[in-house]
Length: 267
Image (cartoon, rainbow, N blue to C red; front, top):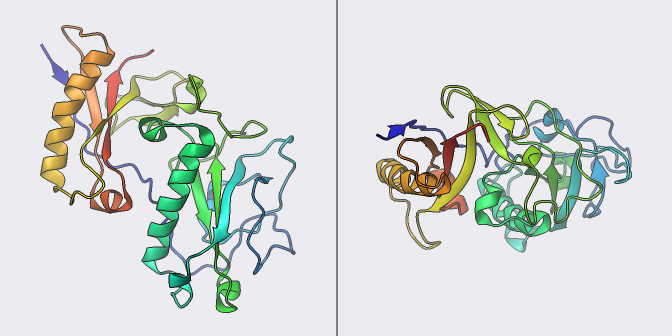
């Protein structure tokens, strides 16, 4: 007998990339030399960022030595392509560029494959110049790895460097689980905490050039594929429960071609 825990949710992976603008805040504990900076930010530096800091499009928070406690590390910076020279500050194409650029660099930096990226409690955020600096011609981006996800109310401290931290067998503290009657209703927690659900696999649903198949097709394919994927992960039990997370058109357009499969397990 097969028990199914059907989950119809989409993770907010695009939130850092498509965050709303229109605010002048540049984070807490700012460095006067970084406020409204026109220069491309330094790479490989660390900060103690909070979810409130990440909610803003620009950030000038002071750096801290990476040997000290920190929650964020910059892993990619650079000039924006010339196509954005005359772009509006809140141009949606900026978010799409940042998502593709930062997500690719993030996977390489932390040592995660396409599947693990969707099952980790780590995430990333991107920042652009302040509106004042943008008006003066600044066109750069900064990508930071964060010790938490878009659902986190606070971030966990990162190791001295996050480079390669998910390579091999990642510790449970950096893997995604959920606690509750279903994945959709449950609280998302690291797998190092007590949990009822674990994100165990992902299933690929299309090629880069494929058009979005629609929500109904995505749900049907995800449900079918996750049933087999989770059953195999659990070593083919006669009874099991599973859940799934599939993404929608916005995430598809950004390049996501996978759904996440969850197994009901406390392990």
